[in-house]
Length: 216
Ligand code: SF4
Image 1 (cartoon, rainbow, N blue to C red):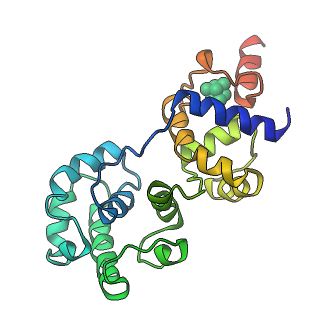
Image 2: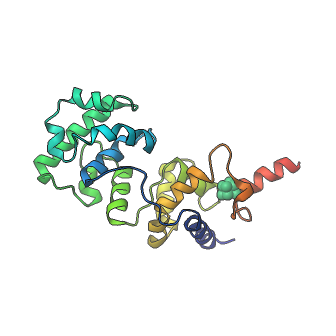
Image 3: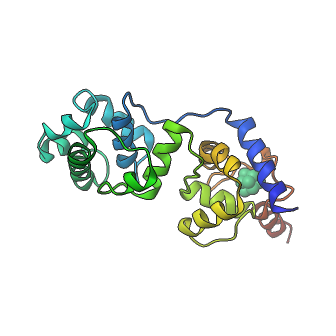
């Protein structure tokens, strides 16, 4: 099957399973969202939401972070991993937002990634959520699904990110952004993918490999 056809099948199936999914992160302001994405590295969205249920009562805009000591931010978020670094990131990013952007959250990849500790992935997720920008966030789930289905053949998420931008159309990148993450989280799970209910078995490399092993 040609790659374009595989992408179409994957996109349609993801939309069938997870129609119009929204981010699982809870937020009220764009600033809270950006900080929540930053906090979510190596942590589940549920853990971030749990911490933010209290943290967001004191953190709505960049100025709020600067009213706190870094140690106070640490106190609020100390149940998530790397909380010390993340507390510093929140404080330093808020400082730059105040000094350079007059507290207005920038809306371009270049401006966002110029903020301390806002990586390209963070910026892409943020812009996709607030503007439906045509970016695919290649996390471990997306990297796994695109390789299992044979849409790409790569060794790392970074490589997948570049390859996806090359082979997937802008339109499909935008529509796959969140549905593909959900597909990896809940259907094409790392250890036990739900192949028995999956509609992509006819071209999935992983499925073919695993069934031929069982048959041997
Ligand atoms: S057949 Fe299995 S491994 Fe392949 S995409 Fe579907 S769930 Fe994932």
